[in-house]
Length: 267
Image 1 (cartoon, rainbow, N blue to C red):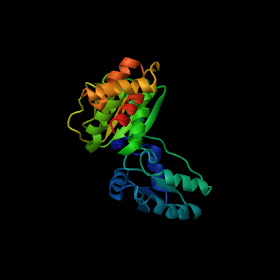
Image 2: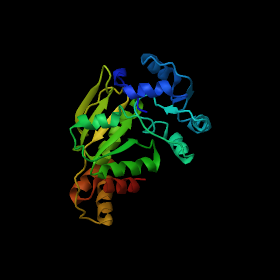
Image 3: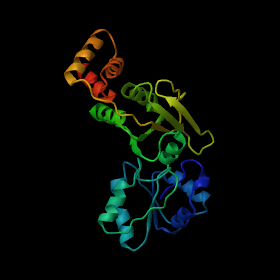
Image 4: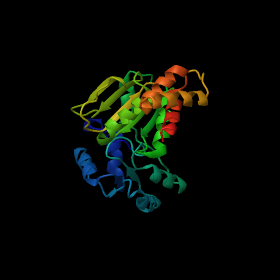
């Protein structure tokens, strides 16, 4: 079930009813959820930690409770569990054991950020957190660069500057972006602009990055032609990012494809 992403006043009434009635509440942090329950006037029968390290271990407890005919609630520290938070494995295990699974809807940072971004919201894709390193990160960034739907990303403050720099490199300076932090909290802020101009300030708090969709570009040049142009640009002293941006503009090739070719050349 969803819990507030900042403002405790956003706790849905039905969530209060469910939390007060279940035999077990699985949560990321018992202290944080305990404060939420206290705010709602609820004395939970039992709280159990279910985070990225303990979710597998918690499956047995959950199935035991459900098997006895009682109910279990799963919550995250903020927002909807299972969406870049623990919960997915518990749901899958309960379904496999043929228990009834339902959701109590409520706050979600991703939909809120899309709503206030100013970008098309009739079609959007939720990417969550990007892989932290390696080829997985490079490939995912490339997919983001070519995405024709509005894109939602999450990022932690200590990785924010690097992620914004990587997005600039693969998407180019003209891509529209809206960056929100501290949603529903006292210091809620959304900054809008382009990847080449936006300033998110000193990173603090959890971020939601909303990228405008890309417009499809024609494919005019072969990979060999692009590699030759990239090689010239790199030999002339251009960075991988700048070389990719220049050659993408010259050839009409998608920036993601050109950037990947540039990365491969520069290894």
